[in-house]
Image (tube, rainbow, N blue to C red; front, top):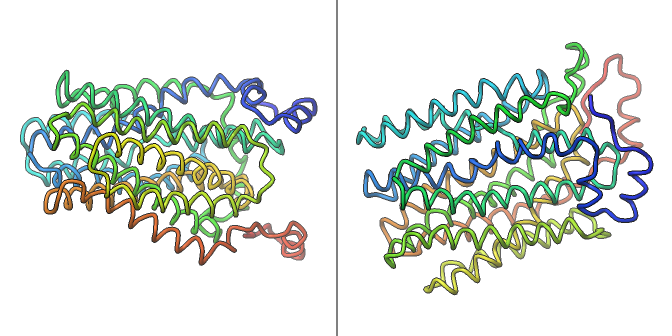
Length: 428
């Protein structure tokens, strides 16, 4: 099992909590490289489905519905996958998961090309989404092992957000290029292949995965991460973030199609993701003195305001500028949300907590692609951009009303509540 950060590493991290120090953490590269390969397809899946099904059916509404089934399935099964990983080890969950995902993705592709009825695409979309490997949460859990009690944890959260967003720069560009210049099915087939190869390579890194509890009594010390009130608030926040991703994927594709420049879709989405990535780099390089709850409130307010302006853009240049601002507003919210998990959730339930948040993004994305697709089909070009506005405003209202639940319980209070019990109990 990997060792935790040494005292000298902690001292250096305190004075300079930067990426250089983080990446010099012993053993980090052994899971970072295969982890990046394994989660690269995550950014390709929804867009690849939208482009393939829209090509075969001629409807963005149908394409969005199939992609939504995939997203809902992932949102429902991701937390269960995270819980199994906490209990039985990441490798035990990853290996069968990537095999099922690759097979399901190929099946969905074949059905779409064969002009199968929509219900058949829905059936194939369920296992495709349910088996999406939750590599991002697993990498974050491995950082928790390597950086236990280290001030570098916030930097690690930022680094993971940057890595996620880099995949959302490369993924849409790759999916669009493959679907528009090679074959409409090429994006989904490449996604299935990368998931299989990257997932198996990541699963092979057994030395850095979190330890599995030795017996059942140890494993039941902590209740589900969903019992923590702050996690439930973060889920709503992340659903709103997912509505931005899903709404923009469909709406940018429809906008590019409306001006007869379909290849521009990947560029516009790449600009949006690049803004997210750049803001993430900046967030991780700053030694924050502001409380994370306050940072989340400020960042999410900026996100809601910028997302509310998307539907007013009527040119590619203006849309790219607004997309850049929206992306720059997402990163602080994502990073702070993941950072709060370390304060709110016991170590034995953190992989599950991370998968709840990942699943929440997928759920918001699924709902967004469905609604945005219908709006694009039934209303005017660009109507789908109303979805990010609505999703983020509703989530912001929830955050303002329930922000007190994001404050961790005092240490002393937690100890006092445990004293006197014969068996360990879960404490929020």
